[in-house]
Length: 294
Image (cartoon, rainbow, N blue to C red; front, side, top):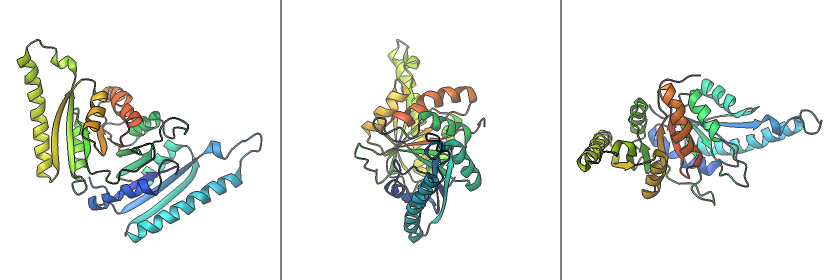
């Protein structure tokens, strides 16, 4: 599961060259091709007070995007990377899916602006729809602070939260493919409080030890592949505990798998994965499961 080709979806306000630059460490994990996509929303070029279709506005927006992409491409060419670009007037998700079909990328990168004065550029529903409709992993990029500082080493210290699904196994294979760019990975599992309701302390410790053993085995598997890994068992609400662990260990991103069973998928994407991707301050790498309804 090598990451050879990256699809970089940008509206420029939320993802600029500094963000792209922080992903270029993936060259150590086989990255050799970057495809840019800029989707100009139809609302920006149509029907303003009866003026009809604003052809001039479309040309201006396309040319502006083109100038930016040419500048970025020159930098990437110097590094020996292949580059492609698409600039389309369309709707975001259908256009991403069209380019995915044409280009077969190994990773889709989309931006996420904080709520507030800036309009939120990609809603959580967009992320959920994308997970449902593509098998390609998605990186929801976040700037780590209000001043939009980009984490320089995005893959240096990730956190992977496993729920022991089949998708978790697929995610581990994806992580192994990044062994040359990961410095150290934290692996966690959140035990629900309902699993610890026994009044017997011995029983509670048994649950903790069993989960810790599974995590230790997973860490051993990653160590064998050449990645330093540290296990953590947390107890409580998965969304809160994942965010807590991410802050405690000052991770560079959160990696999550979306569940592979259709019924669970809606609940998992609808809550934990979608909410963390949407609300967390950390960049999120989302690995879709095997069974997907288009």
